[in-house]
Length: 243
Image (cartoon, rainbow, N blue to C red; front, side, top):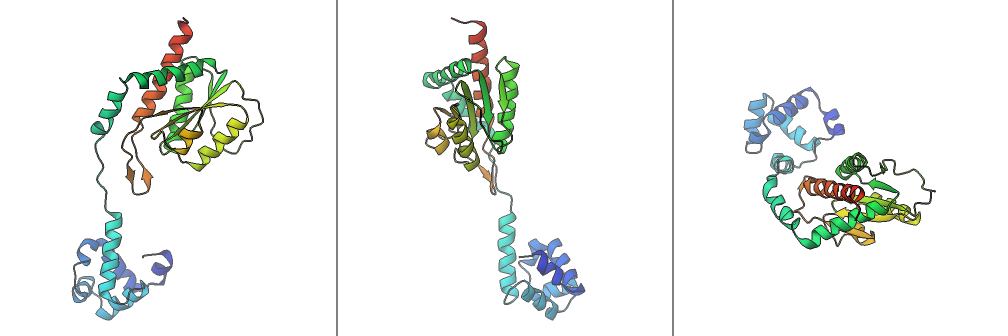
């Protein structure tokens, strides 16, 4: 609505009116045109020119568009994390889930190198996972540069791919390149039915309620941290106490 081009077209009075609207936008949507003109100390004709520059047929349409803009910018309710995590931690006591963690630790033990990939918050956790695994005597690397060509034989390596949605195109593309080079893929996703979960050799899914703030995915990553640390610790215990 208030694009750079539109704001640049305002004359001095219209720019003054713009600042007034921005400072009192919550009240302007309920004002009459005369109230706005008096409040901003401009004429009603100035208000009408202002509305036309905003591609509105009149003051009523301007108020409707402004209300929609305010609704878009309103802060969505964000749930507290405790109830989201309760079910996940209950599942960590499930034998089937712990067997998956133990199986993943075996894969880590058998690999001569563990690679981590992920994008966004998953990339941040992939880097953390790489460091955590290295701290517990597992040779691991976070692959940060997506465009580095992979020519090496990765036959004895394991790639741990992180993705909340399991549908990130960059991560899927990277997985294909790593699989072509011979790496096994262990994915950690929120949903076992996602593309990344399906194309991986093995998958661990944590199933928590997915949340978004506007267009940003803010789904809790605590389950991912738990899974990564648990796998690393299990692999370490297997290494120092072989059966």
